[in-house]
Amino acid sequence: MASEREPRRWRRRAWIALAATLAVLTGALGYGAWFGSDQAIKVQRWGPGDTTVLAARDGTVTLTDTPGARQPGIRWLEWGGAHTMLGDVVSRAPAG
Image (cartoon, rainbow, N blue to C red):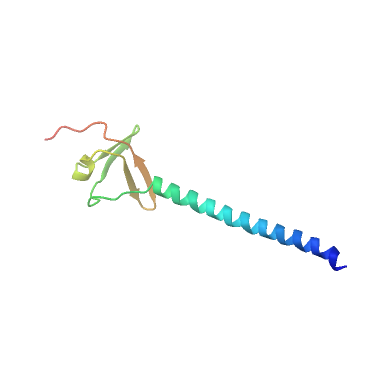
């Protein structure tokens, strides 16, 4: 009788170990994906944050002329629980 139960216990322990291993690997994979995506889209904040949106239409956004707005690169705008990504500067208004 003991010899009949021994293979069943071994199989049961193997299935439990496999399920635990898969659960740990799934969690690690999920964490890795979360961490990697967070690093890929990490927002770098610089400047005083004094840029104001003056207008937004036809796929363009007009910003106030501040030192931060003059720097090249992609920008993130954040407001009241929402955000968007802006591309590079396409044109500048003449000074004066």
